[in-house]
Image 1: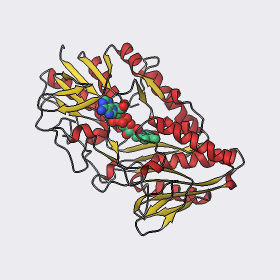
Image 2 (image 1 turned 60 degrees about the vertical axis):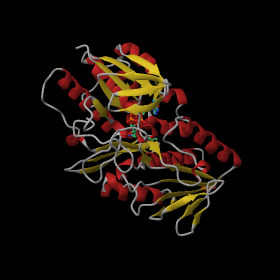
Image 3 (image 1 turned 180 degrees about the vertical axis):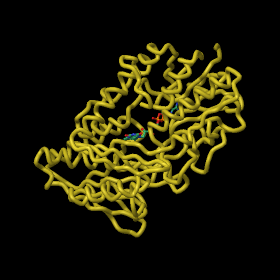
Length: 389
Ligand SMILES: Cc1cc2nc3c(=O)[nH]c(=O)nc-3n(C[C@H](O)[C@H](O)[C@H](O)COP(=O)(O)OP(=O)(O)OC[C@H]3O[C@@H](n4cnc5c(N)ncnc54)[C@H](O)[C@@H]3O)c2cc1C
């Protein structure tokens, strides 16, 4: 099979697509604007100092060598779906199949520069770590953490990691014996944040926050942030804070906005169940880049990004081989995560048939850390892939 595939974006979705397309015999180029894949799920421990920045990076050139595809570091400036082409640092690249996987982009509410993020730039995790340590050195203060919504596409809300960071920070402060020196608050515009994970998960999260002495400000629309981090709500009320962590919901990537790609209201690329972009043969979109279909509680996640990448790769191979059958990502839409708490975790799963939340004290934390090690080693081909992981 001597067809070419150009995959743009070296995150969960892009790397998985590149690996599978190469394995099937295509000539693959992966383009990404960072030399590494940033493993967002384990970046939460950079904040608390349990992991170094480098621990959360997977070197893409190294992985490309091991899987025998080409990695090129560069920034996608524009996309032409009609010509299956992208412009990377001024040069146009074209292929038989173009896989779009450059993720989304965090929305920018007023004053967001006065907050610390967890999504987007990897350096955000280190900045937050340094700010947290500075507050600890100061002797205490007020910490507020929260996330925002996107009414145009609720699947692009990113709340889970904020709960994880709050739980981990509480654990860290307790371990250091300084918990009582901090006032903690959690805020979100929805009345029941986290409800996409299911009723059991929401109830358990709120119970834990209450037991940890975290004030909850839910159901108030966020108007913006003031210098220093104080949160301003639409009703005029304030949540004073010395350090504010805020993870906005995502919108579509700006490179798509200026393209001929079909997009939903929030700017994500429209796809069919096989991850193909309708009306543009040979163009595919996977992971956070794509407009997800499915149940109302669907959410953009790393595991789903990998499933979509495998579905797209399978369908590309079928198309190149002249076979008519196509796979769909829709039966795989689920929410699955190990929500870490610093000293344990909870396994959360939701699909069309069930909602589960299984507490895993102590062992859950080590399982999530183990997953991080597995992710790196398996992508480097140092250990075999486990089915479905
Ligand atoms: C803190 C945090 C914790 C999370 N924890 C979990 C979890 O526990 N479980 C889970 O399933 N999901 C988790 N998620 C969600 C998960 O990380 C995302 O759904 C996943 O990263 C999506 O993968 P992606 O490849 O589509 O996009 P991304 O991971 O965003 O990758 C996009 C890639 O494209 C590159 N790129 C961007 N713009 C350009 C450009 N113009 N040119 C070239 N390259 C570009 C970026 O550098 C990046 O490498 C978490 C997210 C965050 C923020």
